[in-house]
Length: 282
Image 1 (cartoon, rainbow, N blue to C red):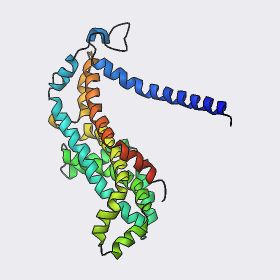
Image 2 (image 1 turned 90 degrees about the horizontal axis):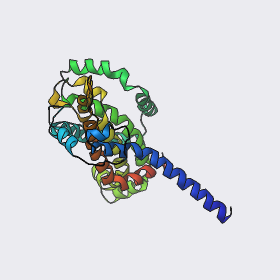
Image 3 (image 1 turned 120 degrees about the vertical axis):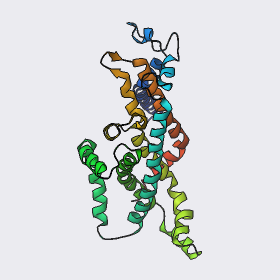
């Protein structure tokens, strides 16, 4: 392949990449731009990509509960508790289960792995009524604890399947060497296996966090008290029969997106390493 052909190919790939990036980022930029526009600019017949007269009135309305009645920080607290709880508990359970699946051979091991895939194929809409009845029977309706259990149940199968590859990629010789040096199973797990699987653990935690943070159907169905609502439910208050408050909607959506971006930026390096490390073996 000649140098000219390589340059043309590189330029085409870079152009395609920039086009995909622009298509993906444009809705987000428009959302943020609209959040700072006054109502006159939002409903203008000649829309502008950037606000001519930026304002914070929509953010003030959202943060002070001007429409949703309950302050924004209450919804943020509920969503943060659910998302972080889902990440911590599902990561711990998935890591232990993935270690067992990757390191030991036991009866029905293959069946267990197949069932993990089957669970992921079931649409969540089909499980709303059965889960509603189960939580009602357990007296866990209208509680963040009951919703947390549901989120963990959905996050664990996917996390196990992903972490299995990361654990299998760790050479057994490292664990054998630690055992020869006198380390017990717990110490070997904590000092040898856990640091090497940490990138994969971070990668799975990203998916668990985003799933719990953005989930709407279960939260809207299982919760009744407004002070227990999550951020996705809060957005519903800005839609009404008389019209939609697009300024507050975009402001609330922007605020809802910030924690996810911050969490991603915090762990992005380990996430990239984790996504590639688990593909070596298993």
